[in-house]
Length: 215
Ligand code: HEC
Ligand code: HEC
Image (cartoon, rainbow, N blue to C red; front, side):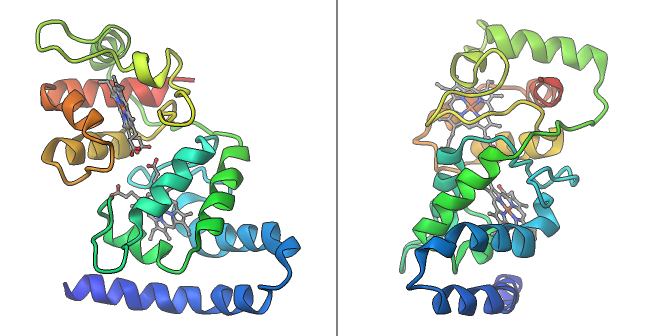
């Protein structure tokens, strides 16, 4: 709990400058796009890269992701009064605490406009082959559906509901599959939770590696 409190305080500090600015500029909505670039460059860049191409395998690449998906995630990270956030991440909840719905929408559009630089993580050939089969055809034996059915044959997703996954860092994808599996991520209406519930750990690793190589 202490770390969560500290994170919130940290975020309050980080947010102090841009928030005051935004309030001052409130009557002039024309200035909004510049403000979004300020938010992205000043707050998000440290972890996701200035253009959303995170170099850190635990932090997702946001560049080229669907705007609606990003907006949904940002709002899901936000606590709603007494209710806990729909998507649990103390780090991201602190980051979005001061963002408005309009900020979330503009940030979605901002990252969707950026050009994706895919992950360069090296992959194991054997696992890649297994991941490829699973991604495109699923696994009849344990009834894992083909990922391509919802995320597209090239991993570009289907707007507005199914996010792009192509070129994402293996570490991040693996972590998300694990979080869906344990129920710690539950903002998917149970869709992904069901998909991962029958996957073996090896299948999770294999498909995550394959996804990182999709272009
Ligand atoms: C301290 C590092 C850090 C900062 C700063 C940060 N993020 Fe994040 N972000 C993360 C991590 C870690 C995750 C993965 C969270 C998880 O699922 O556990 C994440 C996840 C996300 C996601 C979900 C992506 C997806 O594919 O589902 C979005 C969108 C996002 N961040 C946007 C932002 C924006 C916009 C900002 C600035 C307002 C920001 N982040 C600032 C670390 C950070
Ligand atoms: C029936 C449709 C469906 C199928 C099949 C499916 N997904 Fe998903 N997936 C979704 C939806 C919907 C979301 C977004 C949930 C949300 O809004 O947060 C998602 C989200 C994800 C995410 C999180 C992306 C991010 O940026 O955080 C990953 C990773 C993922 N899926 C991987 C897979 C893999 C791997 C498979 C195949 C084993 C698969 N999905 C099959 C519907 C599907």
